[in-house]
Length: 132
Length: 84
Image (cartoon, rainbow over all chains, first blue to last red; front, top):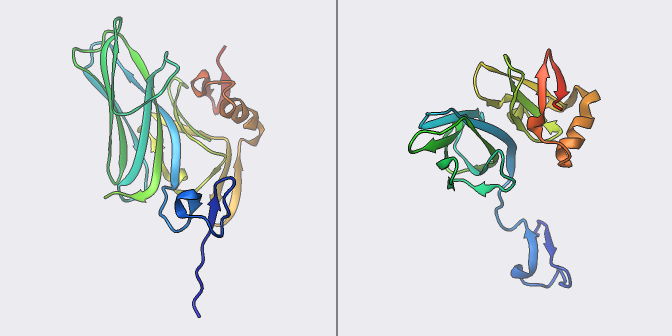
């Protein structure tokens, strides 16, 4: 006789043995993202430059799922990348990333050329899950 | 934590989070030859844990607890220094 196996955790107040799947917090029945690595990287766009980038060699050998957040170093709040940054004193910046089987590439662009050396902080999560 | 810094200036440019690092994380690299890395914590190798700069674990406490920013540190002569 074959037995079902796995794990599941129910929401508070729900009996894990009898509740519906939508009343669970997590279940091994469904695929989840797992983190291979997370970290931080600065990208400094020099004055007058239209773009600057930094590479992170992830070494996974395939294109992984990633999530990236970014902010200007002087800001307190991160935003999900890609995003456009606008401010009266520094002009318009655009943050984006590219991912392949070798590198995560973090990019800061400025359409008119950066007005001053400007540092952006990126926070990344690289998952074990393959997208390509 | 694996901290990447500019070899010439000592400026911290990036990091990989965590205290125990997998072989995949140990092979990762931020930037190019202009950077070097400084590890605080353990690396997993062939089922064993190898410690690096364990006397600096207090630095990780400060960073992880948001008491200090990673980029408030500098690494010179393989030593980590807090910027004032």
